[in-house]
Every structure is written in C-alpha cells, then in structure tokens.
Length: 110
Image 1 (cartoon, helix red, strand yellow):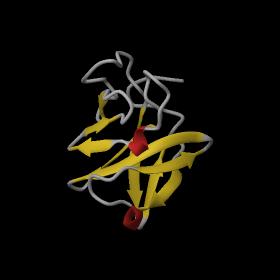
Image 2 (tube, rainbow, N blue to C red):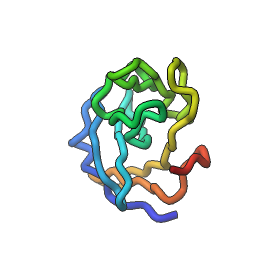
Image 3 (spheres, rainbow, N blue to C red):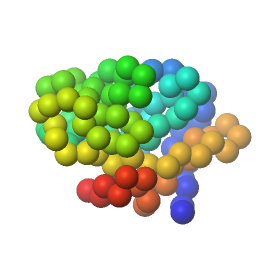
C-alpha cells in the first residue's frame, strides 16, 4: 500500500467535506466523530463533486440530485445513483491524513 499525504488533521472539521487531490485522484475527505473517511470526489450518477454536498454521519449527499453514499463502503443509499464510488484506506500519521488511492477498500475503480 502506498499512502500519500492528503491534508493535515487540523484541516478537517467534523461533518464538513474537504476536497483534495491525491496522486492525481480527486478525493473527498470527511471527519465524523474521530473517524476520517476518503471517498472518490465524484457522484457516480452525474460526475458532481461530492465534496460540495452535505454530510450526515457516515453519509455524503450529492447536492445536484440528492444521491447519497455511505462513506464506509461507497454504496449509494438513495437514487438516482445506483453505482458505488471508490472508498480509500486512510491512515493518520502525526498531524497528517494519508490516503492510499491505489487500493480502494471496496474494489471500485474509475
């Protein structure tokens, strides 16, 4: 696994998505109650950045059509999206958030 710095831990606010590019891949990072999630920053329905949407616990919602995705496994939880999005492993190293975009945890590739 190859982990690359995505941002600083201090850059993340609970429940507020942060857009980052990690090794050329657009990622939405979200901290929720101490857990940091990294998910592909594109809705599988309309190619809209998920980082511009709302977060409710472990769900992130696309602002355009309301598709929501579970950040733990990338599965859509509401229509119109029916395809999952990639979810990436996250590691905290001191003050840094590291993400491995080469090895999605749910085996979804773009």
